[in-house]
Length: 121
Image 1 (cartoon, helix red, strand yellow):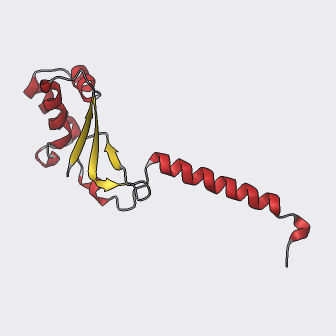
Image 2: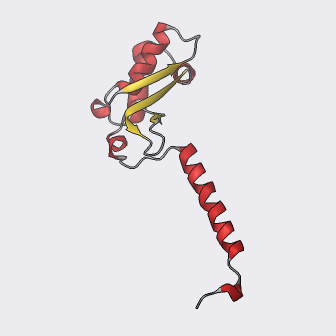
């Protein structure tokens, strides 16, 4: 998985290293997500609140999964799981909202154009 990061300006190298470990460490060696989080907290000598604060300073994007309409990489919110690579027809939230609103407008226009007595059958 290729991950790109958008970082806040005030993030330190230590904090960025914690974030990279949070998103890039393979979960195969852990029982579950909680074990991974406990490992990171123990390894870096931080508590869960500090880990949460640090991880919120970056936005991570998987370059291998892009929106099928706008081609923007998918933002990831947690460590890499195998199921994330099974997303073939990913549509980002912005495109999904745009498509839905366009469909709603088309449906409203069609319903206004057709009246009960305009039925061709």
